Length: 398
Image (cartoon, one colour):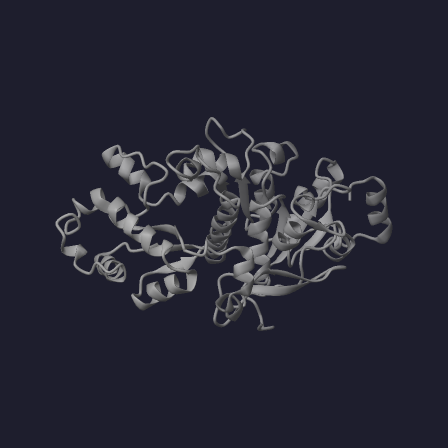
């Protein structure tokens, strides 16, 4: 992977966030060269350090979602730590935070206070429900955002309770949307000198990706239900092969429908009155799906894939993580990389997304031990002496 200059080098980010959405935003920026300084509560650290599988006291999840960062401990409840933040802000381009609305204001670290210190600052604020509205103070995680944002309602079979979408997609989408917002705000800042703040809500990330659902309800009163096809007038879905594998296909256009019918040995079916018009076809999709189910069930995985490839019908096996690790395409795309990790050798992690042709991102190290860079940051950026740092440590500020 290229060791050249990355596009966000020279951007410094102060991350006052934990768990997933805020830290993921910071990690995306760090992969493309930003210097991201993550703060954690002394003695406790980010709650993500205690979630997911562990090895020698290290969380795989934390190691993945906090890679490339500098880590310092800082108890933001203390006046000394709040003062350290105010001293760091003039040297930062971005602040990321995910406290409940009003918490930072109570510490004199809200937007108005930080903007006064650094008018060029971009501040990204991530909460469950946003900084305004009647639910602004409500707590929430990805599950709550999925429920309130509409994605949980759509997930699962029609004859069963709504199923939780996994993994924690609203967190990751919010991290991604926020990173995009930061990039837009930095471009504006570089053009005008004006900083601004970003209001990101977990539930709104879920709501934003509901495809056509919002307009269909607003215009026609159509409530989209779970168990329905994404492309309601065309066949698709997951079907089981003779040897017990699951394969997904989709045929959301006339030419794809014709190819599917040819594969099923029914090349004249698209001309049948039941399938020849957009009005009649949706009513008869169950018949097509029954033919598909029979065709898949009569063949092993390799023959199913061969048939779909031969007829150029979009498809994929339903991949477990074991399947992904073994897949040559994933490997050819460098989507599984070995990342240096303290005390653990290397850890396999996802590659950097997206791939830039001239200035690609890279991963230098997995998420590090708590407080790894505390002394370096306080002495290097703030000019503190060893004695001053020792006093802060004795007072449990760091």
